[in-house]
Image 1: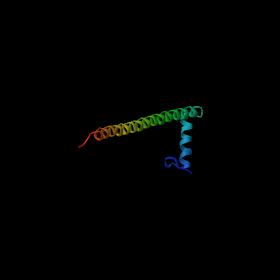
Image 2: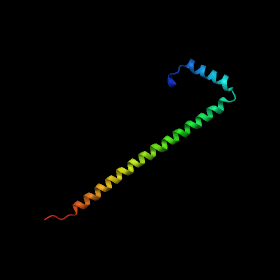
Image 3: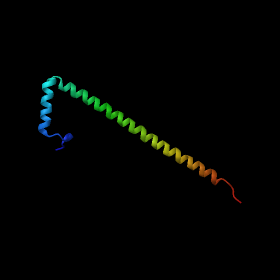
Image 4: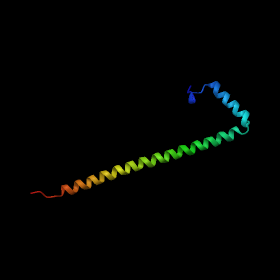
Length: 81
């Protein structure tokens, strides 16, 4: 069994029990849904940022390659005696 955030099962039940006492059983699903939406939003934002960074890295890599190819063509076209 995976121990989420190093919390034991007894501690997990205690936290759930306190949450039910504070918020009531009717509000818990709404709170969990809101937390899930927030986590999903953050995960999507993180993925978009990672994709943009990797895309920029790939684009800059190919631009450098193209510049080096153009430079090599210029030097190879010079006639030597």
